Image (cartoon, rainbow, N blue to C red; front, side, top):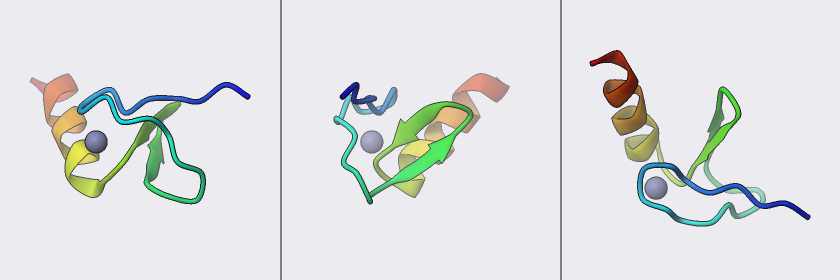
Length: 41
Ligand SMILES: [Zn+2]
């Protein structure tokens, strides 16, 4: 099974944990926020 990776901190996807947004997986809300800030700026 293909596992995704948090593009911010590099953590591997853990099923049942974290957040998903536009095809990416994030370990935490702070990583998700950081990613959103990155693509906005
Ligand atoms: Zn993370």
